[in-house]
Each structure stands twice: as C-alpha cells, then as structure tokens.
Length: 181
Image (cartoon, rainbow, N blue to C red; front, top):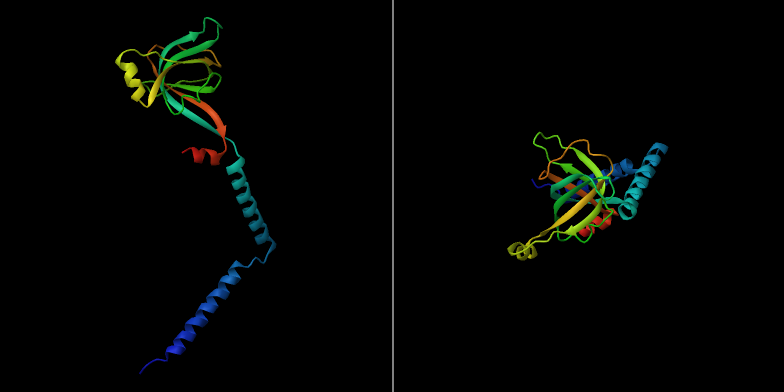
C-alpha cells in the first residue's frame, strides 16, 4: 500500500546524477573548433572591457538657437553664422571657442540643410530688467554664438530661422561617460 520512500529518493538521486553527467558532456570542449570558438569569445570580451575603459567616444551637446545673421564675416571674409543659443548651465563652462559644431537649420518642408564649422566667438547675451533676474532661476542661459563655417553658404538664410547647434564638447572613455550621468 505504501511506496518505499527510500526507493524514490534513490531514484531521484540517480536521475540528478545522470543530468549532471549529461551537462558535463555538453560543456566539455572536445574539438579544436570549439576551443577556437571559446578563445574568440574570450578575446572579444576582453576587447570590449578594454574599450570600455580606454576607448574614445565623442560627447555632444545639442542646443536650440535662432539665427541672427549669416554670410561672410567682415573681419575674415570667411563664411559664418551668428545665432542666439540657449545653453544649459551645466555645460556652458565646457563650450569654448574652437570646438567643432554642426548647425542644422529647421525648415518647414522637413529638408534641413546642415553646415559644419567651429565656434569662432561665444559670449553671454546681456539681458536687462526682469529677464536678467529670471535668468538666474532658469536652467539655461542665452549666448551669442558665432560659427565659422567650413564651406560657403549656398543659399540665403533669413534671420529668425530656428536651428539646432550640435557642439562636440570633448572625447571621453565610455566608462567616464557613464559616470557623468
């Protein structure tokens, strides 16, 4: 009427032992191809870890701006753009003259021209009255940004055109970028 409890225990131990032996057979590296695969996976893992600590990734900041003027700079006769940009206060100290930028103009048609250059001048925009008091509380500050372009302007761009300016503020290792967040 009752089953032997020790018999079922012995059966379960034997089944578990058989499963372990089967797993050992599956995990055993027996052919040269399997050895090469394990070495390749290990090398790729090591490369990924090394790149995480010693690699190089560009850090960009994108700011909204309004174009003030475009054309040739009267001092250098080089193509340039002058814009008012809203830069976050946490990164404004990193934005300096000489940093590479990409300017994307906002167009109603969805086709936005892109211009590449570098910051030639940057200065805080002078605000007066209540705006100056409110700027202290705002998370962004207004700056005059002048961009020296790498190529000539092929079209006339109207003042007041909205644009985005992507500024490369430096290069860091991926682990350093993760620590910044």
